[in-house]
Length: 298
Image (cartoon, rainbow, N blue to C red; front, side, top):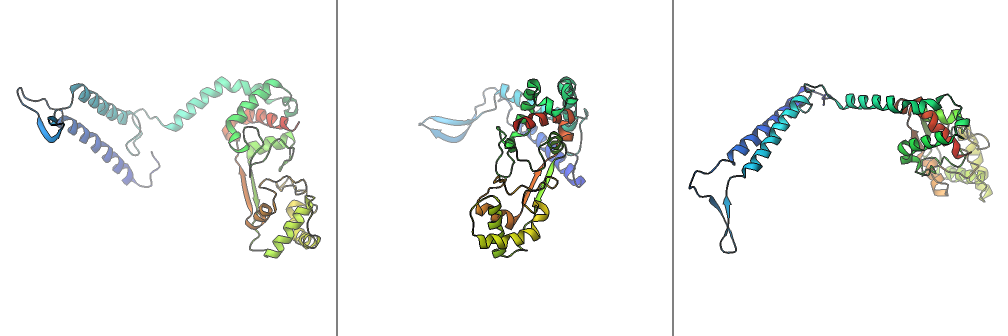
């Protein structure tokens, strides 16, 4: 509640909130007065079933008292906790401080569980049943949204079980990917290549994947590929783990391998991002998680 661009919003929120509380209090008092002895309730003029009338009677006392308690509770809350613009409350509570406290408590409780695996090689850890169970829980909590509960990925999210790695599948490469994240970028070629050039290079890419294509188009596409694509995917189209450029010869496709999808990738380009988890999870958790992922292909 402190990130306001000007003091206007602090005053606007504060005054609106306080005015609402005062209005509710006055409203409650006005419509909760007791009737004088012998005084009859006024009719609202609505009659049903000949003699069933709607009367203007005071609120029940028990209801009024509970309403009053909620008003007092709300006013007290705004004294102790943030809610009035940039006012932080007398207790100084924030969501960030609560998260930090809970994270600290969780690290003190569960930290040793991960630290016991930190100094063990990932290859060895991938064969440790206890470590795999811990890694499985971490994966279920932080990775399944993108890679799926079975780790087989989805369009735009790599399959982690097929031994095909954009940035390398050795233990340290996997750990680095989780720790630092990855940002893959395939530039769009629609403004650089003609439609005919794109069709020809698609034919050549399909040929790299051992598909039957028109040799004339593939031959023309090869020349275009060597001039524009080989710098990332390599002269043989086998990719480059240093750049995250995929291997085009194994018929494994991150965004789909149909002629339409390959054309779409070339025309529009692709941008994929794997977020860094170093600050979020810490190295000990990432180490166990990397071992669990490494175990998929082994």
